[in-house]
Amino acid sequence: MIEISDALAVVRTQQQVVAEFHGIGFFPDARRPSVVWVGIQPSDILSTLVAEVNRVLVIVAVPREEKAFVPHLTIARLKETRLSACLRDAIEKSKSRAFGTLAASEFHLIESKLKSSGAEYTTLRSFRFAPEDSKG
Image (cartoon, rainbow, N blue to C red):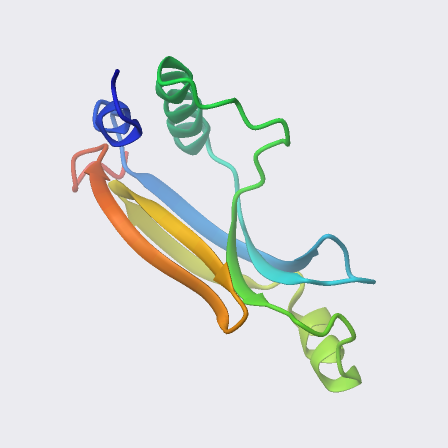
């Protein structure tokens, strides 16, 4: 049987993903925030990459994610879901802010272990999916 990392190694796109970071939000919502995120504007090439990853993972019996894909960058995990007025105001002022862009030609398989001291992340393998200079 093909392993997850071997299946992901065949994922390719014609271009890099150019991620545009824009806006701040919360999961599950602003009333009970447990995660603070910066949004990533969806693009056709990112959607293609996500679809290709999902396609190869089905081959190795990884169940398809039921939730809709929401591209984002997690910037904080909160233990206390009640935000200070100062922090809430600062986030509110930045909720429509543009934070810049990043061009990516590789992705990583990362193991996440949630511990009482916080999340611990380990990169298991990296995968080049596009030529480095193909910003399209």
